[in-house]
Image (cartoon, rainbow, N blue to C red; front, side, top):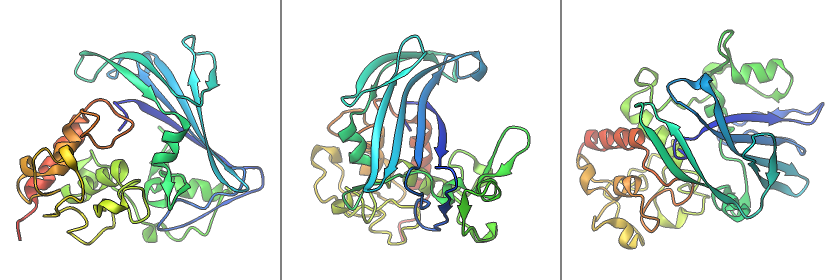
Length: 287
């Protein structure tokens, strides 16, 4: 979630190279790979083809000695994007899905902030292009599984039968998974890049990765290590059946920079994500 910004995603591999399948992590991409994500707002979210405003394009480039992050910011004429290491803030307005106009100060990260989120064991790494997140259909008319498409195009090796490939449910589609799996998917996508066993928030002891099985590490009746005022006076990360007493939900709802989670990438509350996690906590049984 990035203040309701939408994204265009691309991966470019050097000619003649391939990526390798990995069931647990991001795919293994060769040196020279560029992972590209452009953030934009439709003029009217009810009518996506009515025009859009491009704001930033983030690149991850794999070099010989590891990954490198680059941040490009689009000009107001929408004709080009320019490298900006210091980040920037721009006012952006759009018509939301409810027909109401929204205006925010949209913040684009500096390169150090990029490294803060894309951090695995103190090394900059991609987050999103894993097999379980790519295991789904793409395309508007002739839909095809994205991993199968990559394999047919000769840019992915080692792919097993799709029945053996993990898949993350679509968090906002009740037909795609249970309340539990969809809430866990939302937490994994939005939180686990830090709250993982090798992420920068590992010292908190709160692990929100999709496959985490230790309920205490997941936050159930877990006291915070050092939440400060971020706890909102609450005692545990998740109190089964009681979202109003759960630190996790409190920090998801907050827009106070000293309390909110994630710390970067948003200034507004993800109403739909909060509603999903609230229902999930309500459904967790005390025993």
